[in-house]
Amino acid sequence: EVINRSQTKEIIQDNLDYTMFSWSKQKGIDPIAVKYAKGVYLYDHDEKRYIDFSSGLMNVNIGHGDQRITEAVVKQMQQVSYVTPSCVTEVRGEIGKKLAEICPGDLNKSFFTLCGASSIENAIKVARLHTGRHKILTRYQSYHGSSYGAISASGDPRRIPADSQQAPNFIHFDLPISYRWNYGDENLLKESVHQLERIIAYEGPGTIAAIILEGESGSSGCLKYPKGYLQQVRRICDDNGILLIADEVMSGFGRTGQWFGFQNHDIIPDMIVMAKGITCGYLPFGCLMLSDRIAAKYDDAVLPLGLTYSAHPVSCAAALATLQIYEDDNLIENAAVMGKYVDEQVAILRQKHLCIGDWRNTGLLGCLELVKDRETKEPMAPFNAKPDQMTVMNKVAARIKELGMYTFVRWNYIFIAPPLNITRDQIDEGIAIISEALKIADESLK
Ligand code: PLP
Image 1: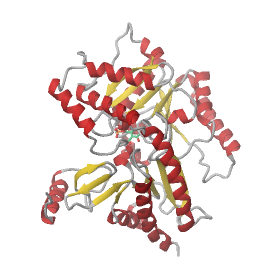
Image 2: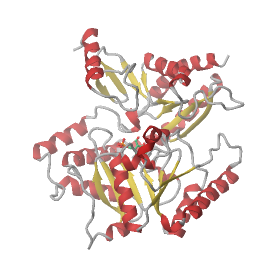
Image 3: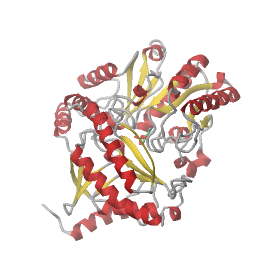
Image 4: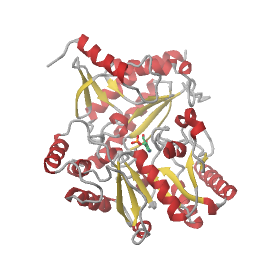
């Protein structure tokens, strides 16, 4: 049933009048009114189709509308929808066991949460309790969530409007980026490692509980680690009694062509923070994965963490069904193969559009970086751009939407991170839309 345009307007107006929108000025928002979604497509109330090139917020890895999840969720709800976290259910044990299977090393013990931020908060608590130290080190160009501790851990400018509420004892460090620093791989690695070692020395290694790093950088611009960097970070952590926490909220669950982003770097962290792709947004869920070594501390001591909805049975059922789909549909292999295909298509796109400065991706976690000039690399919109510096990017984003695509556009980045079950034809369809929209950015260079 197609509802008429005035009804669509009404739906949007109710949302604008009665609800608040994240990270936005509340005036001038023009949301898509999604009626239903299937595979890589969203459909609005006028039956307009949008190809979802960012899997929602890089979370709907298995694609939209998968009835296998609906069935698992309904079945669980028919049995029991909620038990307190002190009770157990069959699905809680099953998803715990499954996660232990896919995690390397002795990462075997799950503490279930609700989302990325609540997993990060609990990771920070555990790291401090475990080490008896207070400082947490993270990268400036990172995002770890919007709650009090998580936004303080984030280096991303999203933390700046709330700067007066910054929690103490979060230290950020910079990481040179190969696109803008013509150092060469070897020097880049050396400089990055030295910078981190210097900061640890200045702060005092004995004060630092943990380093939190995304397994692969996500919404900060898919900024690649220098080759070998995470192995060096692992070594530095081991040498100094610091825990290494991998934030796999965005890079986890197949997105980079591996179960977890850190597996592209041959390291094993001490804890893994998970959310997004664990249930692909079908229900809110998250997990803090602990190593046996850290978990053992609580064999005879109270674990001072708790959430009313920890290990929510229905979310556990959704997670279990989601993980099965990754395997049954070979989605992780497909992410790697399709990531390479996107690489090839973007190489062609680069020849056509002078506004493309850089393209960075791992599997299907990628973004285009637009510039005003390929020589100077001046970004099309600067880091933490003000609204009036977003004119060209806003026009590009509006054109993308008009042409039937939903994707995450931020500053001078256009993300290409579609569901992992995307096909070559669908990638072609999306790339053609981006190519058309980039003409606006190309025009602005003249
Ligand atoms: N960590 C990373 C790497 C993220 O990308 C995000 C969200 O985008 C979060 C944590 C926060 O997750 P949530 O929004 O579920 O709290």
